[in-house]
Image 1: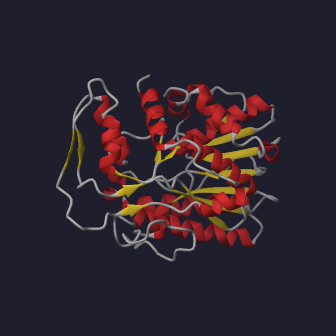
Image 2: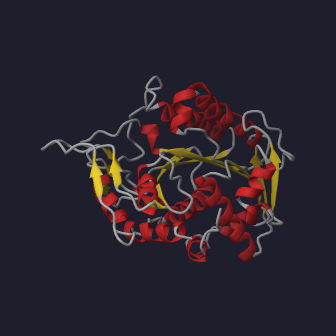
Image 3: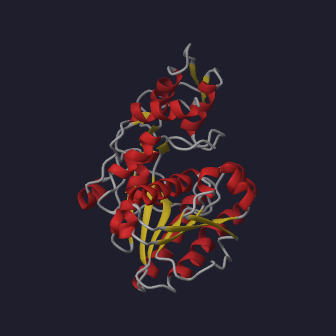
Length: 343
């Protein structure tokens, strides 16, 4: 997998310079480091350590060291990174002296969610419990749970933005909401751990876009990029009216390092953008990138007067507490992602 661009790494560093002293000589344990979010966090951490001479040591939990090295060779070979083999639900870390935990591990591909639903719940819930147990053995340990906006359950079509006070809940019995229900339960465990001294913070991710986003059917915008790269029609399996707001991954990484360092223990923060666009609009923006451009089709026409389905956060809390913003607008985010993919 190609390295992230120097522009993206610099962007993250420029927006986090005020927090990196909190990580000096840190011992960081990262789960799920080969995934989309996890690999961004690992690479931006290694870059900050190398650039600012922070003395950070990173242990990444992997199932297969060779696969990790093959996927991210430039990170696996870093002198600050050590791979440790294990399962997040039962792992015994190589040391019990970590100062920071970044818990990204989960399993919720459409196929796994359909074929192994109990395994999905187990990895998210019991994996988080195990990591929190480990964090509780230390003193003043900080813990970032990579969560999801799906913890709120479906967003009412009439509600423009979801904020952290919204009391909606996902339905555990609904396959489409199972992931969110498991993340919600994992968050509750983290909040309990905060009462016992763990600096637990939850980053509730909304829609993201950027290099390394899967293009295999899991994310709508990833499918759009896959179609455009192949020079084929961008096909929507809906009417195109659902509204999203995509945050670029470099902004996401800057937010996560800020929240891990400074977030209030026991608090969940929305991580996303408020710049809204319909799937139909996003598909057309991406379809215009190839030369020649490609067409866009949808499964059915919109119903006149119907409210669109929404998945959009309010980011007022992160903005007010930490001056965090989605600094990269959607058009720039799409262009950066396209440029990386064309490599």
